[in-house]
Image (cartoon, rainbow, N blue to C red; front, side, top):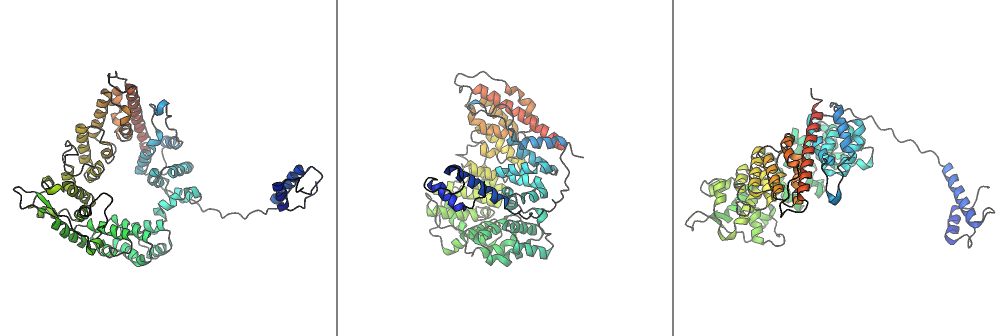
Amino acid sequence: MPPTTTPWEELVTSALLGTDRRPPGTGTAPGPVALLDAAALHTVRSRAGLLPAPAAERPGTAPADPRPPLPPAARHRLAQLLADRAAPTGAGGRRGAAPDLTELIPQWLATADLRGYRAPAELLPALLDAARARTDLRPQALAFAGPRGLWLAGLNPEWRFALRGSSGAAQLPEPTDGEAVRRLWEEGLFAERVALLGAVRAHDPGGALALLAGSWSTERAEDRLMFVDSLRSGLSGADEPFLEQALSDRSRNVRATAAELLSALPGSALAGRMAARASSCVNPDLTAAAMSVAVEAPHECDAAMQRDGVVTVPPSGRGERSWWLGQLVEAAPLGGWRGRFGGRSAQEIVALPVADGWREELHAAWCRAAVRQRDPEWARALLGSSSTPPSTGPGTASLAERSKLLAILPAAERAAWVAGFIAAHGLSEAFQLLGVCTVPWSEPLGGSVVDALDIARDAGSYPWSFSGVMGLAERCLDPAAADRLEVLTTTPDEPEDASPGAAGYWSEAFRRLVSTLRLRAVMEAELAAGAA
């Protein structure tokens, strides 16, 4: 067939109108065949006429990673975990008795990072894919991937999250290299600048503040917010002048964050102003026969209060005065209440009756203050005894707030308190509290969780109600507990009032728990094999 001279646009018109109405005008074949032949020839000629594209710039050499390699068995285990070979789900959504490998990846990565291993080069793509799919893996996965992982992420747009989430310590200049620091601060991406600010702050807090103050007026509001928030790490009295100036920032969110950070410094001027306001609202009731707490909430939110971070408009369903009171008490230094109430301890102050129904509001504000100021004495007082029901104890009935108070206490004390709570109230309300306990669970916490599960099993309780706690136990129990849990893997006789099929579920769940604990023990041994 001779080359066609019919333009491509005319062929498209023939195809749209039909070859009967607009014949392609090429060749002797029937109209449709001639049209397809001409289109095919056009395509071949177009492709043949393309000039080769210039070669892309060759990527640089991947940076060195001096960390030691994984032991062979641990490298094979990582490949298995990243292959997403999770236990198959059975009928009715049941997981079966095999361990869920995907749930063990975070723990494996944490142990590998702790031992200082480097990621195998051939597994970096799978590791970055896993981190892209699961944001909870990213901090540990990127730390394990190291500088080579960040180098590889720069070559694939799908892995750019790694560059946004961390600019990589290896890519930052030395904090003492003033010229390199200044250049990156002025020209770097936002994530790089945040990382740089943190690195300089760890080395020279004053230098970091000077760096931030120098460009403060030209920064975007959302960037100023992130920069101020980054001052939480290493917060000290030296930050007060800068944060005091930020109280006048044009961004409401920046002002609120600056006020929150200043209130976490008990010696700051803002904390003193808040203490004066709070003490005018909360006082010993001198008219009562026994010591109690009198509360008079503020009647207005003036301009000075607003500058110090008090939000004027309350959320829906909250009264203005109680909303303002809570913010004042939350920002006031907790250490000042002892003198206000005759030298009483935090526990004694919390135990005092509060007049006119203000107890819940006042205690909730003290809880927030204890969390903000990281005060373990007040945290203990507001938590009260673990055996006391949350609805009648001090502090707040909110388990979310209680978990924040627990996080302030030392790990061993935290675990003992939660163990007592489970022994007194069972597992149904303990899920959030267990989430703040150090892994692996130490005794008596691990034993109290197993005992509570065993009691629920023997009672024929609805088993799916405990699936969340059972999943936590798989990840958090000490692997050494596997042998003593073996007895719970048998199928018990079902009580008459038990949920149908409960006995079989419990047996399956405990078999999965035991097998997971044993697998975790093997994984830890594999990672320890490379230790000198």
